Length: 433
Image (cartoon, rainbow, N blue to C red; front, side, top):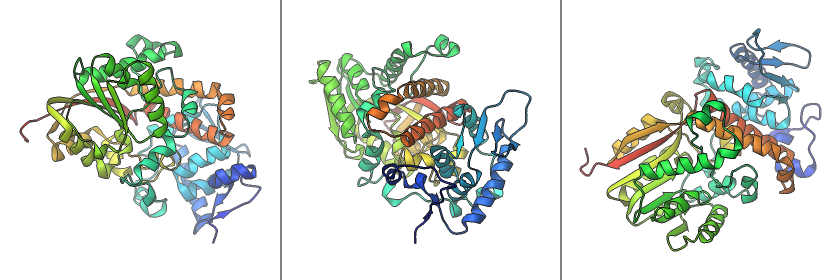
């Protein structure tokens, strides 16, 4: 039996080609007790709306949200029935899909999402939070980060198109938080200094890892090669591993053009299969793709290949430990559309897993969540300004709404303090404590 229903009064009008590409946007879910779920979602959303500083407008003129004399971001519910059905069936997945479908719109997406992120732990009454695992979608087995699945998970995001990423990344092609100067951060960073902020971030990590002339460096997660280039420029030899063929192709070309082909090796390889010995191990926002089940394996691999006296520098996106624990088995909109198999960690979790499974110990940390909020703002502004180019690359309007939501959703998490990004240094205890 079909799990979808099409009602032209409720769902967006997409071309046949787009409907085939976006089936869960073109059609509405029809799960057991759909009407009951929609009614419950409607009541729960209205309850939550009264707690946040957002003006929520309905087609009949009704207003909800925490009423304030101040100017509030506007969330406009254009198709209430469709919105409620999606949220009732999929929770936050349905909330994001409703935006992709145009069931709700806004002229300030970050402004709307930030209050939701700030109150994420409180918007759903605690008795109902315990039911989440029973009523919401589960992670597909095909997205668990086994050695069999991980490459396809990575490819679904990073192999979309190098040209797509180049539409909004700076000249360094660095897809992680930049590190701005304090004056830039207070004034609001501008695009002109963005590439320098990315280089500053990489250099700080290399300093943490003690990378210099003659260092043997392992990079887990190549990106598009900027860290390889800057480590090689210091006189290091680098082995970098990735599971993205698109990223590897461009990174190899950049390395060759810079004249560092004799110092840099880039392999299409799962981190679990790394061999050798290295003075420094560096990894930038890659642990998010590992999955909690495999965190011990990730750090055991680093511990195994790290030379005596070596250092580890990792940049990781984190969330509060209690929220990580509460949401660790939740299948989210980000999993479904952006990062299949992903899982954010917390600082206590990283400290605990290294203490339990390795000789590595956390020695230093540098928090920079405010820098990521500005990084995402710059990316999103750049992406929105180059929509015509994105269309030329073959990406449709639904994709652009999805990508816009992803960047805004992420920025809101950092602006609310729900997310953070931290540069971490680990060194090895030569005698296990």
